[in-house]
Image 1 (cartoon, rainbow, N blue to C red):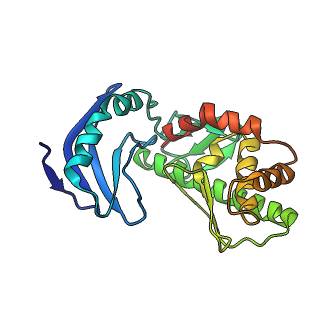
Image 2: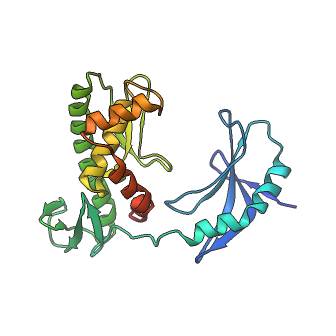
Length: 243
């Protein structure tokens, strides 16, 4: 019923397509040794529709099941925000404020942050990549410092701090003490970022989400993070609009 065509990436792209809200995406399939069951997801960043399967799962029943979820997938696609590029004139959230990308070709290519503007020059087609590099650098600088400061308060050690662009997590902590964050935390209000940092540092003491863990998060943060959690629930998906 469904034809498969291999792609260059370690995944299979199918002829099964979903459409909603002006977005049209084909289903891609990945197999995972860690997967215990089928998992269907719509990437909030770009709308990619992915079906993750255990290594030995039969493919045809999985495709039939994915088709049976069409209403849910297409509803999720319809809810996707419009992507906002990081080019000239764009407005970007930054620590609870808004920055406007102010570009003129004759200016220095070195990006400067002045008040509510990001001032940049050089070729127009390079502006978006420069803005993204600047945002990632700002995120890493702040997150590294804040993580290590809260770690001192918690009495724990921290390994490497890095930033990436995870699809489903704002942060993650390994058992070795390395912590990874989404660079998009720099787009959020500072209080929300601090709550996520406290959450990840608390995992250095409790690698679970039980009562002791949540009590430690509140202690490190200085209050119950319910307001920050509510902000993430209401606005977190919007952060994937940018870039």
